[in-house]
Structure formats: structure tokens, C-alpha cells
Image: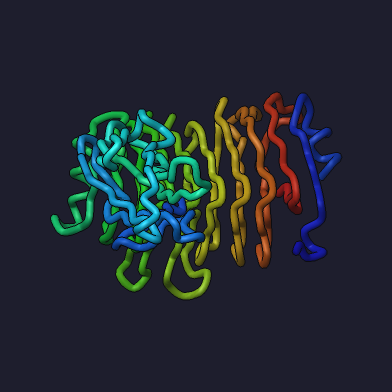
Length: 332
């Protein structure tokens, strides 16, 4: 529920600034041999101990028929054979990075069981030390995927195109995206303990791009004690896409400035921040503005002093940026 402070407001930035002012994964599975997600009737039970596989892994899965005397013929399949294949005996081969659903069905009956499988180029569990995540990402070089199943990693630098997924209680202390890099983050927990001097910041250099889905950004210090912005997209950063992300413990959550950049922030949760989102379109030392396109909508701003701030120089603006469901603050 939105408080009366956060009135419905929709703006489209286009052609003139006057127009702008006028309208003021979760990963599912069954680690440890539990019951799979579609097993309500218990006629077919799929026990899986390998929710997370590395490319090239081969694992045998088993299904139990209840009652055993029923003698159902079983058929195995996966939803995406580019991720994993399965034979008639339930032997799964991990083919490529991604997420697929393994299903076993009783022929001629409406009975089936399924479980989601995540396949990555490399899996990290922390037993090799806190540097193991950085080493794994570096080994991928470009367009690789890394899955973290457990452990805490103080910092990660991304230099190429990387997909990162977290499972369980795995977390990272901070992210740096170097110039031109791309990070696709799914269910990643960015966690900083203020007592240890950790920042939990995500810093994006020129032309760096971040896609984050279902990620959480947490600063565990004194309430709202962390200065600066949790995600700091430097001037001329590339694409920022945040969906279903949450922020906790930061005075500022997202700061972005773009030249022909894209900004999408949707269905995310900002609470008790001084400023949830700041978009700085100014070009230092001139009266020009940067271009930015995208959408900011359907976010939660409970307790925020300022939801969305726009900073600008010029009297006209040629980008298209839609802002819905928020107070709009335009600092002078």
C-alpha cells in the first residue's frame, strides 16, 4: 500500500523539460533428496540430489512409483535440451549454462514430478577460499557463467561478460564492473558488514552494464549509516536493469548517469533511504544534458525521503524515460 506521500505520477521525458515538469531464481529444487515441486499426489516421486550441475556433468536421477505394484512406465524429459538432456533411465547430461526443468511422467496417467536444474560453466562452494570466486570468473574470460552454492566472497571484479547466480546462503561483499564489462546477476546477495569496513557497493565504469534479477543489496551496520549510493553507475555507464531487487541499510540506493544509456528499474524494493534513485543527466561544465531511455516503475518507496531525483542543466531533453508510481523530486 502506498502512503499518501507517494502519489501516482507518470512522466514521459521527451523533447522539452517543460513536459517533464508538467507531470511532475529463486532457484527451486530438492537438494538433499527432498520431494520435488509437483509431487502432491505422491504417485510419482522424484528424488534429486544434484540441483546444480557443471557443464559436462553426468548424473543419474531416480523416481519412485507409489504404490510400487502399479508398475507405471516412466518417461523422462527436460524443458530445454540446450541446457541438459536426459535419457530413458533418468541419466542427465549437462550441456550448456542455464536453467531447465527435469520432469518424469507416468505414461497414460496424470502423474508426474519435476525439479529445476541450474547448469553453470563452473560451480564455486567456498572450500577453495575467498578468492575462489574471482578466480572462477577470471577463468571464464568472456560470456561464461558461475554458480555460487555457498560461502562469502569479500569482493568481485568483472572484466568481461559474466553470468553470476547465487544459491543458499552464498554472498558477495561488493562488485566492480570495469569499463565495457557486462554482468548478469540472478539471486545474488550483496552483503556488507559495516563493522568489518566492507562497503557492499556496486561500482560501474564507462560502458559497463548490469542486469540484476531477484538480487538483494544489504548493508548490515547502523541503520541507514552507509553514505553514498549502493549502486554507483559512473558517468557514461551502459545499461542498468534491476528487476525484483531489494535494498536495505543504504542512504542512497541507485545513482545513474547516462549518455545514450538505458535505465530500467522495476518491481524493486527501496525502504527508508534518503534517496532511492538519482539520475544525473548533467554534463559537467556545460549546459547540456545526457540522454537516457528506459523505465522506472512499480517500485516500493516506503519511508524514503526522496523516491526519484532528476538532475539536469538544459531546458530541453531528447531522451525518453518513463517514471511511474512515485513522487518525483527535481532538485534546483
